Length: 279
Image 1: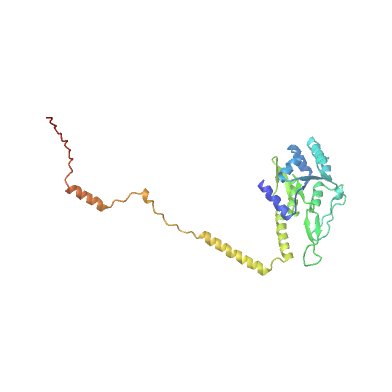
Image 2: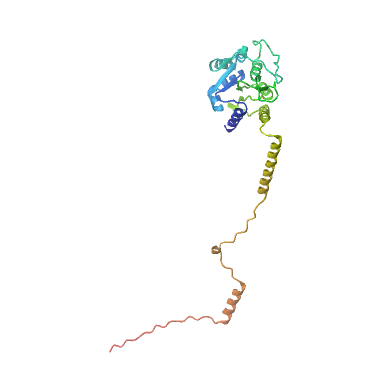
């Protein structure tokens, strides 16, 4: 739970993802939840520690129709009953870092579920940044602030490497897990922090160098203090708990005295018996 709280805190600070959370499910996750007999929304809200809204793309439900079996039928029924359905026609176009739209499948009826999910999450919101250079635009992925719950390793890997700021959920041995932020998400957070500092002119280069030097001096002082150890003096023993030492001279004096003096004789006390004469 501590790891989940840390991950949620990261995405809240750097991606603006706050409750109620929007959780996007694919077909593989729905089937896995049915086989593990999950109470889907209850389990997701327990892991995310907040209210959530479940979503599913129409293409994922259409793919479930292609498989036979009770688990696939139940998975589709859960998607219809418990999730908000995102129609294929409402999928946005992907905008690249250059601001140009990518050419993708125009017929939404033929689009696969994984491609539809990638298109939804990789869509960028274009906003005017507070920069000096005019005409420059900032792009941020995952504008709808979705979590993605999937068992598709290929799709998850594609999202990790190409789409930052998308929290991932998956089921592992009947346990629902929230993954740690991906490397692309961490890099995106670092770039955002740098751009905020440069855009707002918070500090000049001289001030930043001055702060670095001060930090180095403080760190060196801390290292010096930790390395220097004060030698403690040996404490003297408690005089009450120690016997006095007997020197050799006292032993010699006692020996000579015992040799010169005669042995002591015990004096007997004579009891005087007074005879009382009665006249």
